[in-house]
Each structure stands twice: as structure tokens, then as C-alpha cells.
Image 1: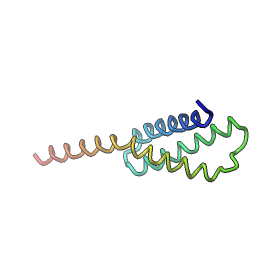
Image 2 (image 1 turned 30 degrees about the vertical axis):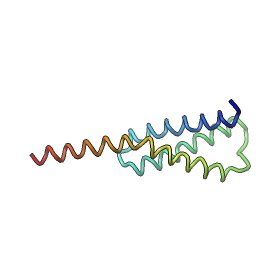
Image 3 (image 1 turned 180 degrees about the vertical axis):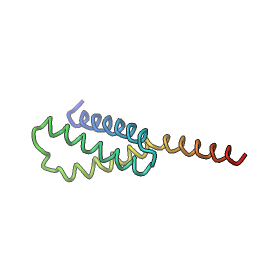
Image 4 (image 1 turned 180 degrees about the horizontal axis):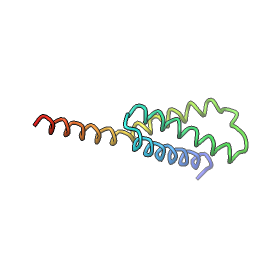
Length: 98
């Protein structure tokens, strides 16, 4: 694996972990998605800074790129959480009618 591929794997591992954490703790889907994306970007950039010892010269471009990828990842990872929560809410509403 090249260094770039390792970076991508590390980023998506961080993004998936942040998404699982945020969606399990935060009930609102949109807020959990945004927080998970921001958390993934910050943790990844901190890891890159610790590895390199300096900020990337294209820091703002990288923030935008990883932010978009983190947002998409968080939305996909959070979809099952949203589905389960909506199903539980509809079951509760159905039971309260009876």
C-alpha cells in the first residue's frame, strides 16, 4: 500500500468510528452527521500534524475534501440508526393508539 492509500484507510476508519459514536450518542440525525464529520476531520488533521510535524500547505483544500467525505460517510453510517429510531417511534405511536 502506498502512503496515500494508507491515509485514505486511516481517514475512513476515523470517520466510521466518529459516525458510530456520534449517531449512538446523539439522537438527531442531522446534528449527529455534522458533528461526526467535524470530529473526523479534526482528528484526522491532528493525526497528520503529529505525523508530519507541520500543517499541510493545502490545509484548507484538505479540510474541504475530508469534510465532504466525512459528511457522506456519516450520512451512510447513520442511516441504519435513523431507520431503527423511526421504526421504534412508529411502533410506539401505534401502541399508544390502541
